[in-house]
Image (tube, rainbow, N blue to C red):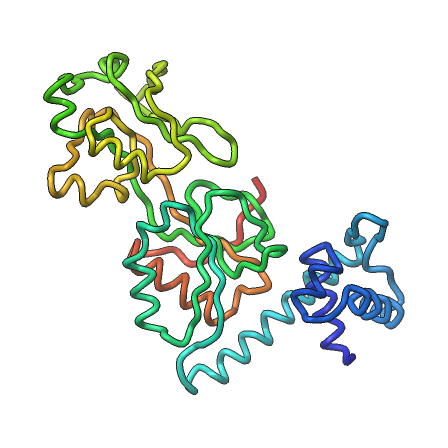
Length: 305
């Protein structure tokens, strides 16, 4: 195996922290990965990994070497991209993890498919926390903050929240005129699947956040059932505005207490540093950013939280 091949094996092993997963990604056996790493260590005269029967970890020398190798890999990818840029459309598989509410981003996704038909989109819809490296994702799209300093992030769009209910529900129960009125209403809550915690209803008065123990008529781990239940007149829900845009437009849902609702969220794309210069990743992220939020800051490395 040549030097570049050994470097590629090292990067895979270092990023996955697992020889078996690295071998699977490379199409070779785990013993082949181990032998390639051992030859590289012998050639360099340093130990790159601490090994045990259960796990591997980078040595300090390995950490430094990984950063340099990722930079080299990125330069090579950029060089390839520059050479092939004028030779036709990008192609190949792009594996993307999106939140369950990502179904609401389908117009942007289908637009990308039409613009780049040679790119094969492999879409995984889930709200669980995924491991980009170990699970082989090229890009992950999520809402909220991110704090992994090993990932590149870019803001794709922002969204607000609305308190909504069906006209028939408010005809029966009355529309709340103040946040405290919600204590007498059926409240439909979203919980975060990863933690089981309820998504907060951030209500403000005169700049101060209110603390209300709202009724829990329904708790659901995804947004779509809450939209449906609100439409059916089952209660009031606090939902992202992009999830109820059509319903508000055609009157199936109506907003209440808008002056008191303050919570805003962010859609982010995250991807490994080793894929920073991947043409497919860049095109996909640029396309989503253009569709969801036309004026975007450039991608930046996350600072450690």
